[in-house]
Image 1 (cartoon, rainbow, N blue to C red):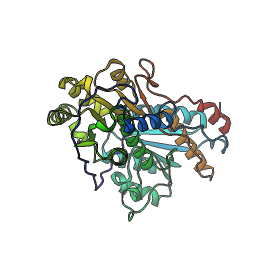
Image 2 (tube, one colour):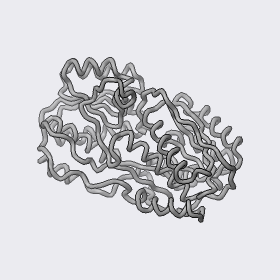
Image 3 (cartoon, one colour):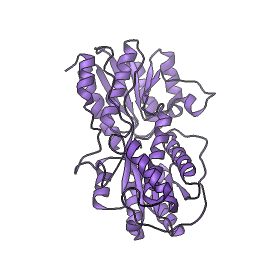
Image 4 (cartoon, helix red, strand yellow):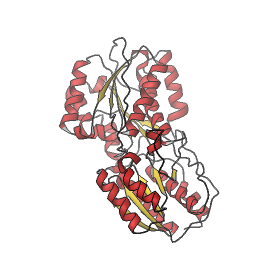
Length: 385
């Protein structure tokens, strides 16, 4: 993900196993409730109530401190090569100008050594706050300890603290962006739940799903946990086959892994992939090459233009969970502004939603975005225009 998807790159020590049970038929992917049984009907109702439309998004807080102008803020971004990284930097620059901040941006290039270098540069430049995007604490722990010693608070957006990964470890984050679901990990688990809900609404009790997971990432491991738990709770007789991928697999190796999984599971009728990049770097090509595009219901995330077009054109993806990176980054800036003013962050209003060809598909060339006019609310609160 990061990516995403946005994704944070901390290694973790556990990876959950896949559930197994009976074989199934292969119904074609279609609209909600395609399974026609009680499992499908319940999932379709939950999809409509909890995930379609604005999903779990809410309005931003209407009250808070005015802009803390003149602050020196250093953004350490995991990598601007992904859509999420690029959008986060664009939104951070926009909001920093409104708040009157002196903003510097460091591109981590998806390299832990670069994350640490960026943090150390922020320390040497005497930043007032270090703003991490999609960089989990364990990958930069040494430099984070140096920032803590220097008395510079570190805040995180889409990242896990060392104590989130290991409860016995030290905490290095002064604050972490909260979501409608709660913590970053709880938010990510809800992404996995949303994928399971969408697939069960299509396939019902006949679901035979291939899940492409990335256990090396904190966020995608949490997505996997949420997916596995929801499938087990909602349809314990459904079959789930986990295919473990690594970032290093992106490209031909990932396509081959997914093609192999499809060959070994000829009755599979659904697929879940942890985030958008897994589709654009091998997933879509594997589905199309299999000749089973019409008989597979496929969901990924996170709602970026390339994946929206895959759905629009019927090229291996049918749905995705989605979040609004602009809104999320403005909420993270509000968290920092409150920290500078000595106040705690409020309810961010940032959640997740699900879209597909018939529900909330963005217009051509556009990423998914929430239908909440959050900017005027923040501007009025900050006294900025």
